[in-house]
Length: 570
Ligand code: ADP
Ligand code: TPW
Ligand code: MG
Image (cartoon, rainbow, N blue to C red; front, side):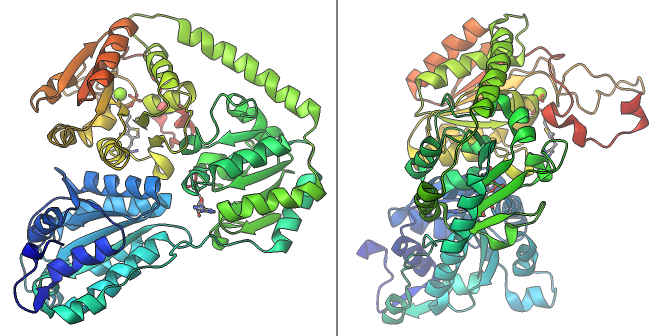
């Protein structure tokens, strides 16, 4: 901190202490929305040389913090005002917890004496208790001299074991309290080794290796925990040394390049249903993997699961060989173990996967080569696929239904942790927050491929993108609705159908209001030149991509999760 910023005399205050405690732990960026009682905290952060990114809504600020935690393995910090601002941020904190991203939401709060007696303070809410169910941990700091400890506990809780979202409650009185400068300096805590790479037991490794040795049709599933672990070289070594085919979950795409010969992604359902020994690496057997059950999986398949969270084991299906530990520590140890145990995928297994891949890729190729007018999802996505193949440095943010599911299959990734999407909750609204968080933490360009409905949840943040001049290109896949744009009001009245959105909307005009560049693309050619120009400029841009309103399917690839009514049975 510059001397000029320090209060004169031998005292400091809670505001300064929060900033010093964060800086002492290497946190250099804050995301938030200013207001009572944290406005001075945002000013002091800037004065102290931290980056402060001010958003239009706390949910997006929280999403930016969460994704920056995922990308950097340092907790992303989001600042919110009391009650409504706090609650707006909570969705993002819960999302961080569910996705295992390290994040800290720091919120100012109102006068405890008034809140606890429910006497109607300005923005009154019992925030600490409201946060508990959605956070991995929640703390309140009542004495300014405890800020150092509060920040340290929050950082350790966010990063240790399975990462998650942590809530830190700072009452206005704590922020403004003055503290003797010497006490303050002594109260700071530098967190040492909060995510120590825990080694699994030798027995767990031996058990897993002997199970793999029995496999004829082994399969490795890489989840976003494997991406988070930043053990890219070790994972590649494991896969290449054993020759076991692997499937990346959506955010693990690019951990090995998607065109790797051992990727079974293009033969996904075949590989899942036929594998006899499956090793999950930083991936949960949740809905995204059919809970590990038939018909997606063979009922006789045996599972190995490598995860930092012991309680994850057996959650959906018995795990024959649990390996509890950090991926970075466990993978080389397992590879060592396999040198004696051995593992030999059957050549018929590898050939069968290769055959399915060929058939499915040929089918995909035919869809990508078609040039329908108006564009369908595939013909528009082809443009992004080709550009991203040339530019592995570009981050891809992706949300929507069809826009998400089809893009995940069409667009190959070639670098780890470069695909950021709706994740475990399948949530809409992460788009601009993740794009801003990725651009700020990496300094690299970002392309956000957004359904027109998905974009609406965070669309106002394009003003934030423009204000901070971030190299973000937003592509709105405008099919005029949620899933499709051709539905009619079943009652025949004048109101639009529940899934309809403005069909001829010009989303490109929105960004022009803030000084960014808008493009309107109706065919792959105009889309390609818009994208090239926008990327070359490294300036904020939005491309309105006109998509056939009849091209999508309800709920994209998860139609089966819709409860059926007589309407959908008809
Ligand atoms: P996906 O959605 O990609 O399948 P999930 O979010 O379901 O991935 O699973 C990620 C898993 O990774 C979580 O169970 C989490 O505990 C685990 N994990 C996170 N970091 C590590 C790590 N460093 N080592 C081992 N497991 C980890
Ligand atoms: C916070 C429910 C799932 S997908 C979706 C909604 C509203 C939008 C799909 O339309 P979009 O994509 O984005 O235009 P496309 O290509 O199929 O037309 N609220 C939240 N999260 C979710 N998942 C929903 C609602 C939903
Ligand atoms: Mg749509």
